Image (cartoon, rainbow, N blue to C red):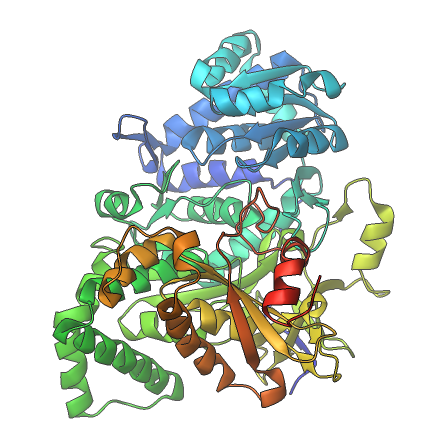
Length: 606
């Protein structure tokens, strides 16, 4: 296998005067002022639309207000909000005037927000609602650089636009012209799944390069009247990138969805052509379809259809053409099963894009087999989200694809994936030593992920360097593949494999309340049992064991899960076991549930 690969082709050229804001002005020039650009779900349930011209007018008016407020080039401004169109307007306005956007996850606590505000010397903070405004206000006196907090629900946008009437177009244009590709655009604080959050400094060039390159690599996703429904938090680089990605299209529309409470309905109303999400959402769609089919005749049909979809996908991967019998079987399942599952994403859906965490191969082959191309990507906050991704016509399932042309990947002597390209960040804010540790001596970024490369440069992730478990017997165990398999169980929310310095490998499992509510009646048990009540049931243990057995079938005995425990609680941000981007914090799970692991799995007395 290869140890280094550079994707053929010239690296995309980013001019020195290109910025995130020019992604908007370029779109305006291509599509014209009257082309629809954004839709936003309002609190009353209606959807409002802005054309490219209206969006740009709003951005410029807000930008003038920022200048009048006193936001100088390089000043930091925080957005503390759920995903909504105002987030996008502020983001582009801040980019236009050369300010530094410092997003805070809408789920972060006041203490977390205080640390970010002070570390980046935020001058102005903008919250979306009263509850988040109050969180910021509670730490206002502890943030010496913070001058003002505004609230979107109290007409913060109108207030900024009102301030801006004193600023001329010429003054604004002069400020816009002073901002360049290598200026700092944003400081994004990592969600901290392996330690304390660090502020990654990303330039305009970082985002513009990967956004435009991605548009050239997967143009199919932006063809025609492309429509993206965005519900991931814009504080996450992945969501920021995909927002910019839509702006590179000629006629694409982005829909901002502040809440996922009515997501199934919203997908029917908005009718996306592609959906970006994390693996857990796609798992829920699959599990919901399985539950709806039930355990009787329809359930058996669904199970056969799902397995055939995977077989169909594997044939495609191997370049094997289906015979007449297989085509007829696929057509039957299309009518009975596949069309309705695709329909859950809306009537116009064509592509799914998954990132943020590894996606189980069986899930990826299923969606591909029912006619939904699953684009899988890989990246870090430090690479402005995606660094590599599969292509529509080079979609090697099980890999996260290749980098964009001109970018490079290599595997170190220890098996760690290292990357080099225009979208690699410039360093951690106020942390020169951490920055130095993150880069190899010759300038490559050390990702912390373990991976392999095939002969065409497709990347296969095999785990996190820090996640590798070494048992008392000296066996190295990669936990992620087993965790993915166990988590495909419809009643499981999370699975964490444990066993570092232990005699054997075990697992900690949490339950999914929605999955339980559908599954319990099939076992002639009350549907309204709580997680705490269900955790100790033998029926629950038996069901989970089936999926543990599947995971164990793929590994040696020394790597297999010998025993698992079902927790009576879930992982949350409150108990520090989940990050704001909903990733499991493995060290915290081992710390918070240390006694339970010791006694429940290993029989130790604490």
